Length: 496
Image 1 (tube, rainbow, N blue to C red):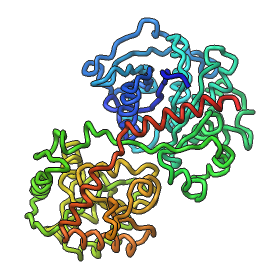
Image 2: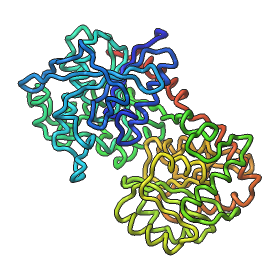
Image 3: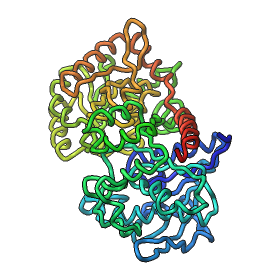
Image 4: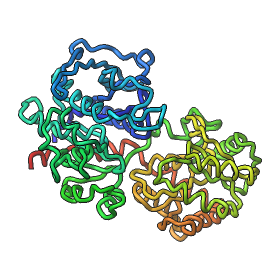
């Protein structure tokens, strides 16, 4: 493989320009690291209403105005603007088409909480717009790295619609699937907007899934290589139908081209040595700042500090796979331990009702915040002793392990990226960074919490676990090196 690659990253969201979840954070962090490694990396994403043109200095690109994009039986004209990822030299291109993207939400109508009914049209146009923009730029990437269903049609268009265009003859595609539960399945009539006939969605075709047109399946079938965001998750989706969400057959057919690259953590942001959001900075050799942050966290919830009592942090989530139902069922048993519990995050309406009552019942030991900002997120990582994660499945999980660098110890279910990352602590060897449980049940996770709380009382041992965790390297630098190796595999297997 040649030393310097030209890499186009295609994201439906990129922090700080737009963000709906962790995908946006990947869109910010990974391109920066690849650029720092010497590769020519560029990013392309929709321009949404939320994108602040003035703050991030979006500029018109003269040759990227009024680009004609074939759309069904007509032609749509898009404009493309350009800016740089903050604190980097990574150029970002924004596909500007106001009728589709200038809305309050990225994928969901915020007025009714439902996905936009024309999401198929929006991301058909975006995917074609990506390729037409490259042609206008006359910039030929070695790699087009796509992410999730919103970009799944890019590999399909490359192989079917633009297959005879010599401009793309040496370009391969990689699709990263962050979560198989989100598939982009639409009525089969959407192929008309792609400019195709119905033959492309006959039963068993590369687009058809459950009698619908699946953008995710298209990406899986037509990308040169597919990867998941953790090794364990890759294994789980092949073995367990409920985790593959119906895609098991097509994944098995493509198993030779299926790989995994763990996600990373941005240590320029999530690091107690440099964290601008926490009251007291600290590091592995000077841990006294941890207690000061613990005190500050408890003060936020009007809780009194008791040195022997560990703080257990839980991130509430409305996502069905994060185990909030199990947490509610076992919460009163959890409170039998002498612990503080800090619950932060949006959660569901049932979470709100339950934990508001729980915080009243255990008002001296429970704190709840249903609105969480960036400052609170960082304070929780720095102030908690234990992070409880009870997910049914967790594709990556690293977003839930940011606290490792802060010496916050995970009690986590062994699934997906959590299983890859959390080595169980072994009292005899002194190795390990957390406490792990397997079964998705109250008894399993309560037993793991019991072990953690018991070890916490032995502060000498607990500090050892903290230092083990703080030495771990889950940085994007590690992930980026693995992606470069994967790009090399893609190039070597192109056309096979």
